[in-house]
Length: 221
Image (cartoon, rainbow, N blue to C red):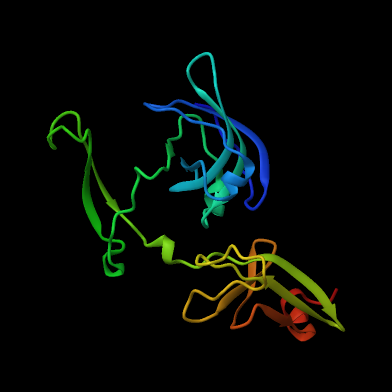
């Protein structure tokens, strides 16, 4: 019903948005419940696709809409969609246990399938059902992007480092999260403004940007 501006992930935001529901109700949750996964929703992004977000507060308005606030944006690797924001009229879907994930083998990704949705007791192909052709990219198998990029001088070189994330068993505070992929590998892209000056691959969560390469990429300072 109202727009939701761009936001980063990994922190609470003070944003508010009003949504209309086709049916059902919403409810506020304690902070610890949200951190445990409560009030998860999908919001249609201006950048295409859907952002996954969570909200803490849900207040019923006089016109029947719900005012949501206390957001955690860009969940489950949807940071790009959160940074794009959502315009007035974007779709909002509360993700509960009633919304289940379709089971597909990985070799069916990117293939188009016809889908129908409608009331459980109605017959498909009636006016109460809608149809759409959709394809899926198995995005849930894609590793999460690293976070907390740092740069530190080592003589005339620069050490770039970051922290790896994982989709599996990544909630522990007891040290480095487990590697849920078969290999650890990163593509590091260095820009001079909008221009790409270097692409490198590394198998560790750091990279020594040597002074000779810095000079070649940016020229003398």
